Length: 437
Image (cartoon, rainbow, N blue to C red):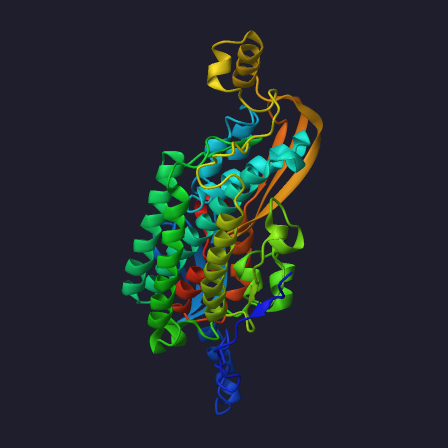
């Protein structure tokens, strides 16, 4: 297994000291004027940033207390989307809820589908029975989704701090991923590709070659984006030593994903608790050294390169070949979990009965409770399912990484300038669709 890789591009001697949250009294002020000066210190302005603001990346409202240009207190206000996905799940079969997972982190719907399916399969006890071809295809989908989410996140982050060209570069590559998703799933945005126990369909002809072509092209885009940003004086000044999250704070606030690894914590669920075929693949975990906005940018850039590395390995090891000429299965061989082939439904009474039960009642899950978490682009996306038997969950809890990552804002924003808020929000790379689940 590969060891963790540390990204370092900084001069430790060049440090920026943040302005104090409350200005101190000058030593020349006479004692008689002390009360008047304290009154002036207490004059602070309360500013609402959002929920309609381009830099909040969605309907996030920040209640900021300012002392001049310095933030003294920050309170995030979430919940403006009014989703209620967890309650909706209680009135749907496990399969019917799959399209709702597309709407969580809607920048990585393929990854959401896979993690949710793995959670239900763990409840059913069939997570170890997934065919190898299904596992490799799911990993390819997950890593394509990671690249897609990071491309948009970094493009929007760069645009927030003034680098518009990078957004155009990243969005061009992201469109290619949408084309791949469309040919695979029939949809560009809301894919709903996975099924409980497998996949909706196998790979179309020529798709493997198209993914190889994309991998060769996107790495060139990575180089171009890094040339535009990594040593750009304006970008470095806006992000370096800004929004520092210490290793201890990152752990205490439950951060996951690139925001946690940007603070130097070596924790990646693909390594710590391997699922699917990740244990058979070689890749490195990118780590930051300071935990500022610049580190979080570097970590995501390296993660995209590692995702390309993972995809290439999956394409080489994919059982059954590009067009599956050997007939490798993509679903668990269980007629009570996976819909039977259509031709058998039309010719066999037993398959017709299974089809009818699965569509109307859902899979018959045993009573119990499970939790499964996957390494989503934003962090650990987890599903807790409480079952009392039958085809619908009794309770479901979604651990949304964006919701947890936003909890660090009251800690990290005070002491920064108002203009730093935009850079810090962009570096956290959150999606309000899963925050207000």
